[in-house]
Figure 1: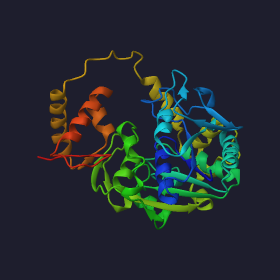
Figure 2: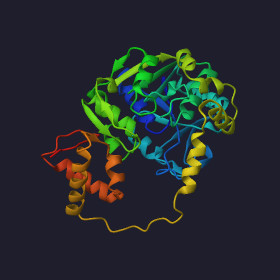
Figure 3: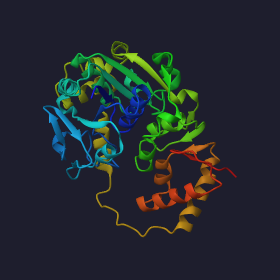
Figure 4: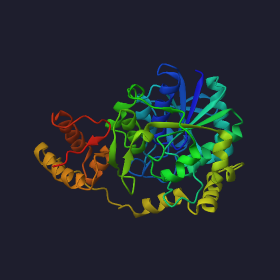
Length: 366
């Protein structure tokens, strides 16, 4: 193994890292992708990132290098999609544990590079919040990316920063973001997406789904669940921008502030100082507001009822000017249980009148 990639923000960034690895080096080139176990509350109801002690079945291949496998499992009440993702991705997955702050992450990165025999690191972000200044009003989740960036600097390994799908996470407006990134280094193509496309049958990442759709030629106005406003899919959405580590650090005040940080509490304090908020504190507040009672399972709606509900929703949503939507938006706005979502999406795929647009859904306007 010679390639080491880091999914800067966790979540869907691991999928994007695998996609970019295919585009840069080929699908058959061995690689390790390091990622956080830091997922939205619908997946993991415990706020903040998980550490190595929150899992069973990690494969400790070297001191400080814990691989996630299909047999890895989170300890309740935590949840994680990473074991299922490890089963579906060609690169191997390794856990980034940020509880030791920047310095702890740097030790993990250095250990992983030694185990891989990798002479350099590719740091991958989908959307662009890795170059956030901290004062953008739409910024929501800068800490994981800034920690990864600061840790790569502390690890003192040659590092290239890649931003794929600028603006697709809707955290930095494109007019602010694109001048920071410069000219694109490459454009992703449909052939690069084959290895990750099946993951979106179950994985809720919207930014990575948009990136894959753009690479496969989808163009139009897309509605997501995470974004406050629709996103336009044009040729820009499939671009990948390359920065040096120094360029990215110069653009990210939070990453510079995190230099020498030895714990997650200190990282939260740095985020409060630079950005005015801590996303972990926001997660704690949202988790505290969740209802204590778990809703009782209900009988799934029959196929005809599901199709009728979707048709009515589709008419109303297309009337807003949207041409595409994500699976997550459909499932959450229609309040579908997993079996109902599976049944509805299967029926939509079998509909000969519906043009294919995977991993998005194209809306049919009246």
